[in-house]
Image 1 (tube, rainbow, N blue to C red):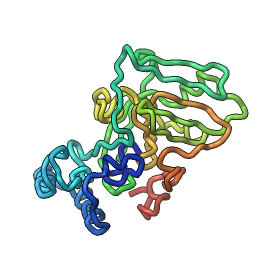
Image 2: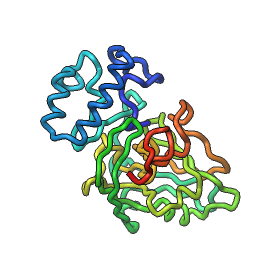
Image 3: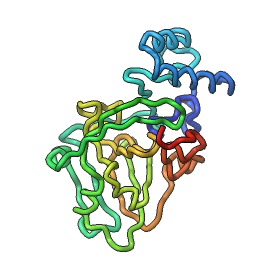
Length: 249
């Protein structure tokens, strides 16, 4: 997932793994990372110092497992991601639709915007509470494209050239699924998947694909990047991946 898989467990890019770590150390570090979300920033800085300092100077490769600014970690399955701006960004909506469309960033900004404030929950355990996202409801773009009766699912592609995700058509039409342009009341940064990302509020964060570039309507669900590697296709927080017992927690 573009933001939920720690560096060091990306089998597609062995060059990004860093130094090997044992399973106990790995799981223990994830627990420390979760603590860093809840605890004060000094604890987070202390953990990073203990593990080697800044990520680019960390000989162990472990600081990539911890939350940083705002409680988030920045993950990618691609070795590099091009930057897009208002001049170069395009979002295509195609597949089983009668009106294929390509949106510029300005086009998306001109549409009615919806603001949601929800907890962001990563399948690896960390959580960032009460995080605002703002953007266009995905259902609005699907309605404008006139989805055909044979459609059953959506496939999302990203301009990193690697990551993909999927939702059923019913999931995609939920009011809490956005094509997001803003996060934490400011424009999406490149690290957070900007200028446009998917935001699927009720699911684990790997479903919220960063660097969104394509929305393709299909006749079946096609597992995304991490689902092809064992993650749940339906990633409801609290009801998948064997993580939380209480979906309301």
